[in-house]
Image (cartoon, rainbow over all chains, first blue to last red; front, side):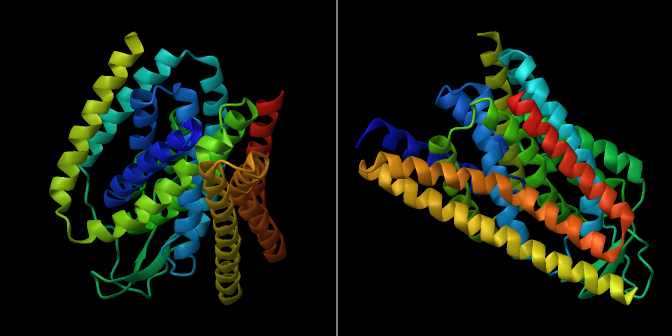
Length: 276
Length: 100
């Protein structure tokens, strides 16, 4: 077996692990894939981010195609906020070309710590209105929720805040190769009135086009190679498929603690790397 | 109100089809391309498959936005025509930033 084949298999394995971990926790795999590619395989952060963005696009497309029609995705909210995420990802993609690698490493460390904090203290506020006849407004929605045993409605609040969070998420997505759902979903859920599952499904729709904005820039600059992106994409897809089935019976509490611990380790390694 | 609901449902179904097509096509090309690479023959064919698969992957989300623009024009929902066109312009900005 030649060297490229060996590398492709390692990347496939890394993608599968990242995808399984990500899906078990309701996140994309990028937050785990990027550090593996940079810290274990020694890839520059820019090519790791580019490869990870390709997996984000694939995950978004696959998940959204599967969910289309079940009303969990709020197309209108998604398309309003996408205007902010794609502009953000354009700016983030340009910034990534201009700043030093060490700055990106430190930024990844900071974001990983912040994500760990969000995961540990995840606000679990329910925003559903149990009366299905209520008018959800132009941007609200209604969907079938199993926990409530019927159709539930919700209304959108604080749209400017949602737009701002989406813009920041777009920037971070391009800079670091993650989807950005970790920034949008808690904001939409805690302050903008969206139930968690609707926020997550709508975010999953948005991250595809957001990641594309960044990926195009990396592709044009030669940082996104098909031979490296392909095994990562297939790995993440296989991992997500397996992870979704394994996570079903797992203890969510311990998964979250495990994930927060992993993220802190990632952050420390990224800081160490930035000083080298 | 009823007309609007059916419009958005139709759009969601079309978007699902576009995304499904993009995912299946690019993943199949990646899988075949990688298989050929691992076996170590026909490197040109492998490169072509992997390269095309990546382009299709990158083109899938923009294609979904184009479909949405068309649907919103049909619905005469100008707010959403403007919003989806902003997304397309930002993507065009990325293409410009990549090659200029």
